[in-house]
Length: 100
Image (cartoon, rainbow, N blue to C red; front, top):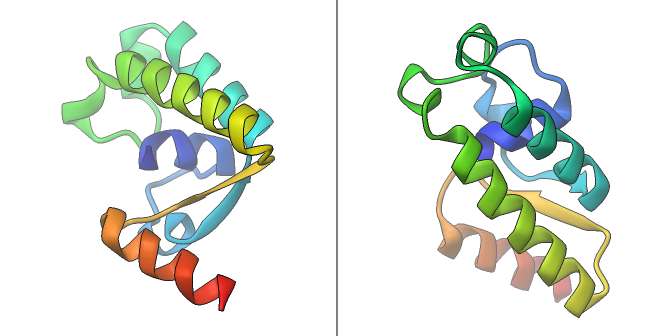
């Protein structure tokens, strides 16, 4: 999710501060995931934000994240997602805080 967010944000290097709590449009997530899926291994490896351990698996992860975002966005009528650099509990706490 964070690697797809880095791509969607147009980051040249991995920047946890830029990714954490970033608000990204569903369409931007879809585009970023599609681009990552279509890249060759060498192209993905050359991305400054790509962790070397994710080069081989990011296509599958991006495909799964793309589908989840699309389905949740459709069902909940959302047009953005928020990415957390932490874990789901931090994201839930942030969502609860913002709704209060």
